[in-house]
Image (tube, rainbow, N blue to C red):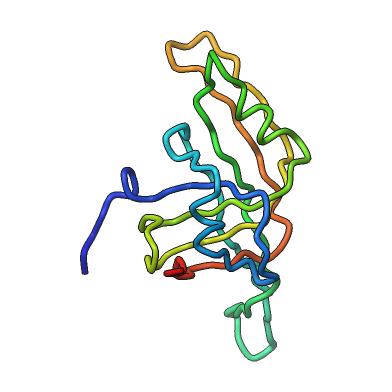
Length: 156
């Protein structure tokens, strides 16, 4: 099994629209999506969590569980702020809807490991600090539907 480092391989994109109701993008939609990978300082969330249900019974002191509802983890991207343009502030303004595409193994055609999250921007705010670090903006996303996970980027 080949191991790899996500940095330099994984790509994070934003697409305004995806035509397919199951969120499977076309190759044109993937290549046309805005690639924010180089501007991203941190990624948080973008995963599915299960709220397990406890199922105790009178026969045992062990409390078993069964799978319950799924929900999305609180998700955000932290970007480096640009002192010339305001692309992050305008393109990902509060209320913006679209899709976060995470190409975990790269975005070349026929590559496996594509996750597509339908999102709405919940907030977009600058992190103001006196620390010795680059200026950053955190964009929080509400995941609005079950994402498509582990898809293969279309060949055409």
